[in-house]
Image (cartoon, rainbow, N blue to C red):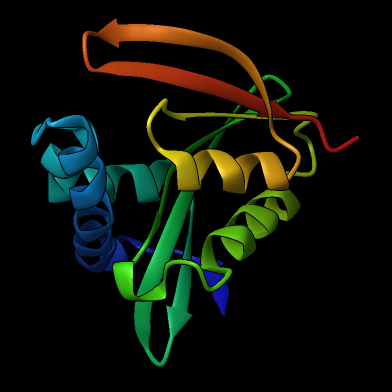
Length: 150
């Protein structure tokens, strides 16, 4: 079940986020990727100030995604799925629900690291297309993608 997150969900969402991003940190050799060092208060503020959806299975939060509209574009962020639920359609369902929650958006933008093959495959399968790459440092290049549903 996918529903809107509330401030009280911040701790559980942060736990899922950290678990989901450990593999990314290992992949890039960087234990300080922003999702791993984000604080509970930062997550709570994002939930209170924007759209954060959560996937719940058996009373447990197993994934979440953030969306923030700027003009007619929704910036998608922090799509996370608990490691034991990855590959089961949770990420796909969260993105689909976010698209439905943002009918005013004519485009959805997101980014992921260039080595994150599973993420890139998921986004491309869902209709996201690469717009550009941004080299951050020696070990990380961000791949920016956009999906226009209309």
